[in-house]
Image: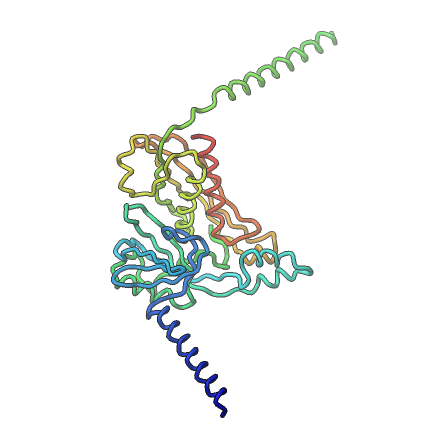
Amino acid sequence: MTYSSKKRMTAMAAAALFCIGTLCAQQPAGTLKVEHQIGFELAKANEKGTLAIQNGSLQYTHNKESMNIPASSIEDVFTGADSQRTIGGTLGTLTMLAPYGGGRVVSMFRNKVDVIILYYRDANGGFHGSIFLLPQGTSNQFKKDLLAAGAHASIPPDADDAKPSTDKKDKK
Amino acid sequence: MKTTKKLTSTILLLFVMAMVMSCVASAQSAKPEKIKTSAIEVMKVDPSDIKISPAFLAALYENLVTELAKSGKVGRVIREGDKDAPGIKDLVKLQCVVTAFKEGSERQRQVTTVAGASKLSVIARFTDNSGKVLLEQDVTGNVHFFGGNLKVTYDLAKHVAKLVKENF
């Protein structure tokens, strides 16, 4: 092995270690990557961020900006399962124009996600209803963690199934 | 004889037309007075006995707050339970009661383009501080083509905001 290749290997190893360190620093235990749908204070619709429970508060972080609400201010927590289009947004809408029904085929591909719905009061006592999309299979544990941190729920975890947009038969 | 019949029918026709015109005119002149308020408090959506996911109730609530604020007809839109609400004398409360809900399916809409529509109907009730009903109307939101099922709440909120624009 030449000196230059050794140097290159060392640099690559250092870069890999730095990346791993950075990732670990950004993702503390109990942090979930989420997509905010609606209702959480100043967060925008369809914004991606992380949710974490820290010191009895629910913390939403987006672009290094964090918003906290005390877990005790959460009046109700609902969880459920949902699905979203694999190709969403404007591109997803444009695929509808694909010839020979191609757009319809594309719309059949959907990712399964979990949903968490929070009813809470802001600092001024105002009611909020917020919805987050979570990775599949994580919502129930997150609800348990929230309840342990002081949140309230009318339905206990494991007995909850609040689906915002299922593809089951329509209900009336 | 024939002339008399014709004359009678013409007079009758004219009379009916005059009646219709006067009715239209009176309806136009008797427009309800605009409701004056400095703030609307949006109350939690009442699902009544309709089976509806809490996600729809939450989304409808948030969309109502956003769309009413956007309408620009009311100085302030207040959330239920806000500490400032009791101090506002001319406060109007908006209570939406769900009357019908069809969840629909985004997948069905995209695949078939005719099936899977989402529909949500509510009674939008505006009351004053004493509980007197100032305005009450059925409002319906739909999603027929594009968007997820939750978009029905956005459509409904826009209709409620339109109602506010017309009556406030």
